[in-house]
Length: 247
Image 1 (tube, rainbow, N blue to C red):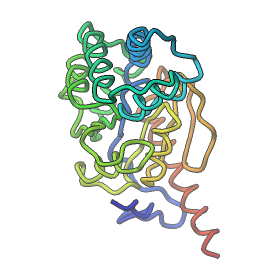
Image 2 (image 1 turned 30 degrees about the vertical axis):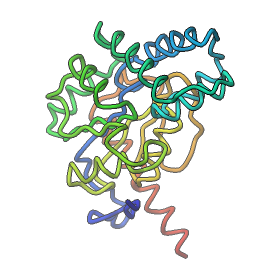
Image 3 (image 1 turned 120 degrees about the vertical axis):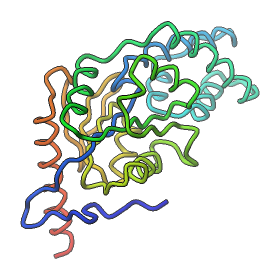
Image 4 (image 1 turned 45 degrees about the vertical axis):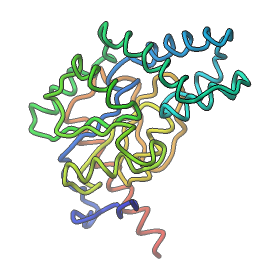
């Protein structure tokens, strides 16, 4: 799957921005405060190896898919273990924690409700696998999303653009009509490579500034009007950047 050109069918003309029609949300660390639950699950798996996970290794795992995380875990501990067995232990530990209920990030449920009330489409795009996402959606709300893309439903997970490209297909929208909300370097890169403007709300690890990214400290004071403003500014910036590169 190749990344679409930025403007698509709704090209920015004369510096005006395309209409925002959908918001694509990451899950862990963006909508839900579940990175802390993942840390507990990882610590349980680490304990099974008789080891402790370093803060540096844990930070590097934020936003990564299951198999990358397992590989990083084995590398961190210098063990030659069966990846499938480690993945199963990690999944089981996380399922137990998710089933108890997942806390939201501040402002996330209110923003999702506002997006839906405004008539915008919404998608959940996550590196987490479907069996865990379905449990999380019991808390987040299955009805809140027109499409969901999980880590085991794509060939290449974040930071590859495929998850967000798949979301565009499911929503039947061009990249220029959408805005992504992410928290991690891997997720932000995935969305940017798919050609979608990104509002970054860093959670566990910092995200470096880059073209196509805007930043907010929290979603608490972010409403649909702010999303439209960010989308418009990033869209116009992308248009003029592309134009300057062609001259």
